[in-house]
Image (cartoon, rainbow over all chains, first blue to last red; front, side):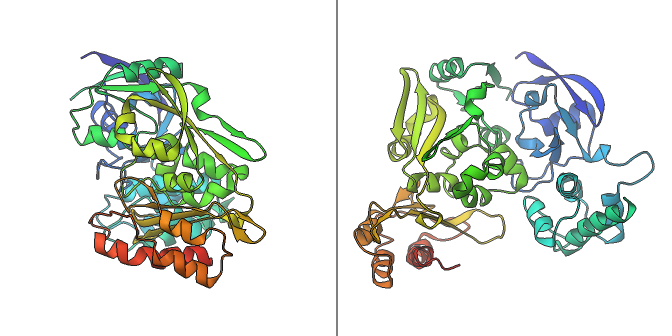
Amino acid sequence: MTKTALQFRHNGRDVALFVDGGVNLLVALRESIGDMTPKFGCGQGGCGACSVLIDGELHLSCLTLAETVNGRAVETLDGLKDGPNLHPLQRAFMEQFAAQCGYCTPGMLMAAKALLDRNPSPSRAEVIEAISGNICRCTGYEPIINAVLAAASGGRARA
Amino acid sequence: MPVTVKTFANFGEAASALSSDRSARYLGGGTLVMRALNEGDVSISTVVRATDRALTRIDVASSRVTIGAGVTFARILAERELAFLHAPARSIGGPAVRNMGTVGGNLFAPSPYGDFTVALLALDATVSVQGGLGARDMPIEEFLQSRERQSGALVLAIACQRPASADAFRYRKIARIKPKGGSVITLAAHLPSSGGRISGARIALGSMAATQIRARAAERALEGRSLDDAAINAAAAVAAEGVSPTDNALGSAWYRREIVGVHLRRLLSGLE
């Protein structure tokens, strides 16, 4: 079975790798690139733990054929922080106790980022809709929703 | 198990590759085929893709719309001209699934999925299919009845008439989890009327049989009548005629039969 050459931008950095046919983007990110921030949850598109941004759009990396991102830009949670400084969403998640076991957190943060990138002042209903594809079994969602709203208003105050 | 991925710039070449290989599956948004691969489906040895822009085109004419099979639900939601399809598009998945899942793929989504197709069935859509013997248009009902045999064909587009008014097309998905969740029942009704009387009603149901089906007895109960309580009750009373739902984690077959009339009554009454 031949491998396919693949090049794309990973968190602002160009990467080149070879993938087996049919490999999904999540496996390519975790096993070939070593970016462990997107998580494997269900492999079915039901949990959102593997969410990443592809050209700024929220996608499920486990349902994305790796070679379809050739030439595109992939953002994962690993690219969210700026050096030692946490992203406002990460800080808000920390301050609002929005992570317990933490397994859903990378996907939640990427879904929240996808929302805030196009809608910096979302309503509560819009936040709920934005994370509706992400399952959390610990928090009951309320702290997560509050954290996204806090990050949104915090961002506004700084702007 | 690794699979061979074949990517074509032209949909005709992709259709040929698909029809000539029984173990080939067409990859659209990935929400069905990648899921199957992740689950180790060994019946798929080749994945066929097409990057042809013709598959992602939306043509909106005054009364008829044509939507490329590769158009995602997020794009439907971004298209103001397709407002009548926003409710079914919004009822699918979370934002990531809507950014990936396509209109063409939804035609193949097994129960309890395939909500968008319920809307298309009520709207009497036409499915354009390219097979080994060339392209042809077929009514969506015929497509769904022969769906098992269609995996070797490439769906190019769907087309449907725009409902005459917002009130003439109604959609409702019953899910246990809100705002996202698999369907207990999905209902859509196209209710054209002339002179205050229903003429040519089409009611479609999802999760009530192996594929999306029409509630023909309920359609007949509305024909030629105004949409009053008596007509709505008559349609609701026969809503379960011809259905063959199965048990799943979201609801039992018994429960689905019991409540389909209730939800059809609410849909036709315009109740939330």
